Length: 415
Image (tube, rainbow, N blue to C red; front, side, top):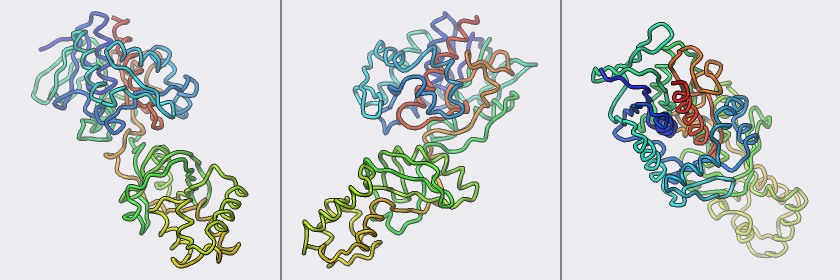
């Protein structure tokens, strides 16, 4: 039987940094990963570019996680965004700040982040075992006694860190195993649901609009005709609906409202930077400028090409209609079309396609300043297995790195 000081289960972002940090204290650390290599999900984040963190200050950062955000103060006070940037710099990875406070590696290559974390673990003598699936965790009283692998091998440790991720992207190894283990050990699991996931729209125009990206627009999420959330930013049309940063941000709300049997719509304002008078004045100006030319010509100054035919059809504007023929009533209809383009939401995409999972181990059962279980004496948690989720922009990865760092540090300091 193999015996270690610490066994870390799950070699994602939080698990890799937790294992490396624990090893800095001279501990004999084993990192188990069920896939053939560590960090598979991390290597595809941010469309392969890996948005590692955000420049927001701690108070704003925490607020992005909603009610559960305050739990992160303990981890962020030990290891925050500037610490993370320095951490990777020391491992040979420089970062670049982009719009929205987002930090990416200079190389725009997520594999560089994964390789740096593996390097960090190995230089601290972490024993990384891939293709090693945990079948069972055996407890005795309020402690973990041993873990059993699928090949029958039994491993023991003084302390264990559970960093198995959520249920999204199961092909990368995040299949929800950690929830099962945590529950068997006595922990409460808040139901895992999709977060940061594309949404499905009922519209005859999706094929025509597929791939269209809209920037600097505003969306309003409506439930039973009542405004719920308003967001400014970018989105994209897909063959099944919508995706993009602001869509992903509202997706967990969409999921919840759908399961409350609400009528859900998303209204798109294509010209949010103009108030009512400014936009109407612009319409008047453009219509006068184009005069006897078709309205279609004028719309090229206001809309992406993929939207023009749809806009004309929805607003009953004939292809031969001249700008000079547009009266005040028709202009008002055009105004509404530019500022309130509504689409019916039918569902979110499945949890398997979500970037992260909402739900997980109940935070009331985890010590904020150590990541230690309040139920099992030698167990620690970190990363997405915890009931923490934030918006796009580097927030979730920072939470994973910070909780992983704190969990690793806590096992070392309590030796």
